[in-house]
Image (spheres, rainbow, N blue to C red):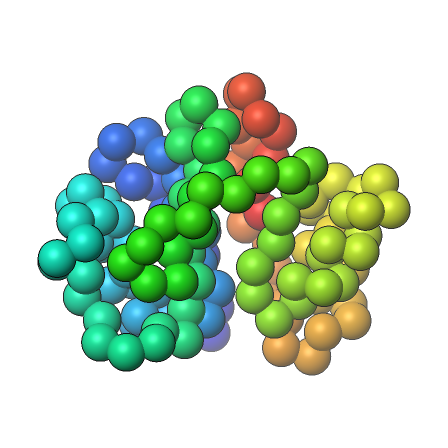
Length: 124
């Protein structure tokens, strides 16, 4: 079985998840409700990462209740992260980078979901 790991958040942003699905869903629900630090739903270190791409192109990562604003020409999360980053470093787009990760990482696969953003390119 597979599931989409891209979610459209209420405020119009997009969130993408890697890691444990149940944790990621709780984190995304928390983000959807405003990401209030005191209301963070998980205890301890999560086994999930969520990145949020805002409507204005800001990329924020959540590995817990503290947001990390990311910069750089490209970014990836999840078990195929290194393969995807290498592919993008070599000039491939995000979709091709996920194809490379799926081919080389035994924990990756089951298709590719994507959202095209007008101002910043693609989120895969």
